[in-house]
Image 1 (tube, rainbow, N blue to C red):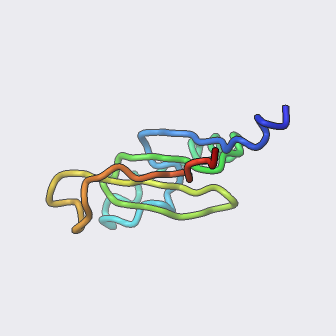
Image 2: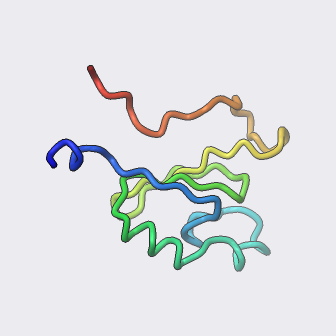
Length: 94
């Protein structure tokens, strides 16, 4: 169906889908990110993948997929940003 083809795919996970998306403490890099999860997300062929776990903000495009973590973390983890929801896809025109 043509309408379904035009709807963006968005997937979600708690864990980090690629080790390269973690930029935090160097001693944690060995255990952050799951290559197998990253491969599953790639096979889904989605436009956006939203994830969590590390409490660090990420907004990075890799191979046509936007990987997004709008981390709130703990209050002192917020890096000066407001704890408001983030729109991950534009609102469609009516």
